[in-house]
Image (cartoon, rainbow, N blue to C red; front, side):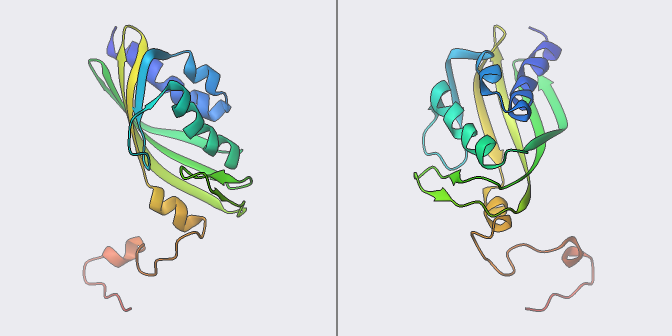
Length: 160
C-alpha cells in the first residue's frame, strides 16, 4: 500500500478516539495486532488495547485529539498529537484503582508510531506525557518539576 493509504488507515485511530467509537478503530486492526503503551509492562493485544483507551474516552467524555503532524514512510506512520478534555468521570488506572473526577481541564501531547501491513494496523507504539496528565489532575504535586517557558530565557534567574 502507498504511504498515503497507510496514513489514512493510521489516522483512523484518532478519528475513532474523537468519535468515542473504538469499534471504528478495531475494524482497522489485524488479528495479530499488538500495542506498546505507556504504563504497561508488556505489549497488549487488540482487546486489551481497546480497554486501555476506553478508560480515557470514559473519564474525559469531551476528549479531543488534534493531529499536529503526520509523517509516513513505507509501512510506518508517525502521528504527533495534542489531546485535551475535562476529567468528568472516574479514570481507571492500570493497577485497577480509580481517580475520582476532578472536573479539571487537561492538555497532553503525545506521538503514535503505527505499522501497517496489507491494509491493517499490525502494531503501534504510543508515547505520551503521563506525568503531565497526573500533575494537571492534581494527583502528583512536584513543585519545580514543571517550569514555564520564561524560565528558559537566556539570562533569566529562577529562585526556589
